[in-house]
Length: 198
Image 1 (cartoon, rainbow, N blue to C red):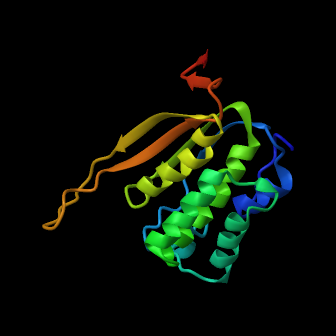
Image 2 (cartoon, rainbow, N blue to C red):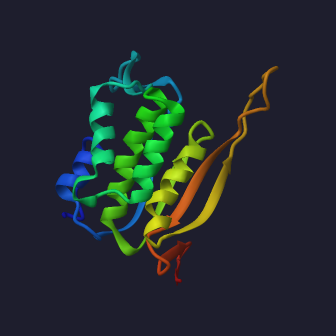
């Protein structure tokens, strides 16, 4: 792996093709949240007044052939890539959620979280940024990968933000969640300029 190289593409494919086992100290992901929205990228032509938009990514999920293939990959678990806990969790969620957009999202995340676990060093740490849309499912998924293999759930960090949010139907939605896990009980915690070994 080249330490000074930026990879562009689907992180699942990049990790599987280029990233070695136990080679990364820390991973942070801010994946799609299953918000059922499209996100645009605004850009300008240098020196010109016109502003254009292009779709950065679509955060809408559906059960399709790709989701089915990924689902089957997890359930067949060839070469024991996934933990038994992850396989059982996906089986159980399929019974509850059926094959639809929520399960498609969970299957998508399962593959990537498993690869992140693989590439982390034994003393590595992992942060996953999400919102309340799917955080309860992602916490179960993270436990099935990290805790099931001797890792540890360390923190649930709440990122509270401000701004106008008024609704007659629910309380204001004003926070995201960052889950913090270690791959093992022996992890390195970076806080400011201090490195703490646990």
